[in-house]
Image (cartoon, rainbow, N blue to C red):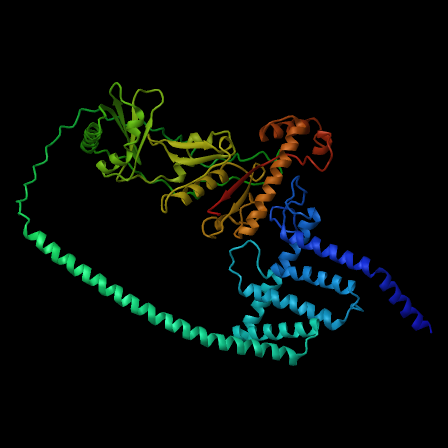
Length: 566
């Protein structure tokens, strides 16, 4: 009697609350569905480096929806929508009163269906989406089946598991299932025969039309050839005129200025012992020595005076052909390019000269020609690439006083200027730098030179780096340097997470600098160090008099290098 009464009470409880439970399951299904549908990789998720909640969330389900969608899509991919369908079916069954209790066989069948759909989606995945179609589960199981059973064995296992899941969940007998598949097979076979005969007839008719079209085209071509023969008979031959001898143009008397290059100071070239002040900084990192770089061979700038004067004459004559009058007043040969200073006549517009770059390149047979104004002079600079270029070595740039005495920790080497002097720039003044060029133009060399120059200038306390290299070719050499915030990123999806973290870190730094009333990293670090000098034993948070979860001491620069990420 006790057992019967407990069973009756449970049935009555289920019958009383089945509408409420079905409504709850239906709401959960809709919430999961809209969370999956509105998934955005920029929202907070389990794969985020920084788990701070941003101000704007794209997911319709909010923060919980973004984490839920990320977890389901990461594990099961698009097979996660089976969760939605199952919850809706469960709610409907409960609403119409056909649900009694959860059967182990039905639960097992549902799991088999979820897994098999994930594997099938992984097989047909085009790998062009940021989301893997079958998720982590589908990818691992597909790789397991292919390795141990082969491709045909994998398909056999998948089909068997899918049919078994249908039998366990929907309770379809195998006899009826076989009857359905046989009917589908015979229908497809009958239709395929009709389709095959239809396409064969279509191919025959198309082939006949093509033959007729080809015959017409051949007839038209033959008539055209006959017409050309008749026209050629009426042509009067003309003797070829003799080409005139080229006139020699006297080269103008242009001064050739050999620029004086700054000599490297012998006191700077040797490796310096002073690297960082270990009392003020946490790490014991030592800056690399110059001896690690390849020595600079002795190379002199070869100047062909006759060639330079001839090019100056060609420039004047070519510009004159296009109605631009003027003269070359000075020539400055350099290691890579030679600059011709052109003084235009009165009334000549600068735009008319700059638009003739391609024509001058063709006339001089040069690789490239660049035309630009020279500040402080009433002339236009025409830079022509030299046929024989000098090799620029890193050691002569790093060892130059212009780089060694640069105050910025983000000083980067760019090469040599027109005069052959080392050119150094401050990355702080151009926080967003785009390096573009054709294949083989030196993009990778410039990126490597910039990275090496920062490594020779800054410690990990000064500069931290995030390197993104989807090609896994250029930046893998830097995988073990202490400046990295994380290993070199080669997966585009992880690169997205790293860049999201960088955006949140930037916003966090804006708030920290606003708290201290400073505008940049230098001002922030100076204020932190000033406070620490007053009470060295106190922590950064105590000196700043702010909540301890915000200020964490000196703020290093963050340098992000991305090598061809679309």
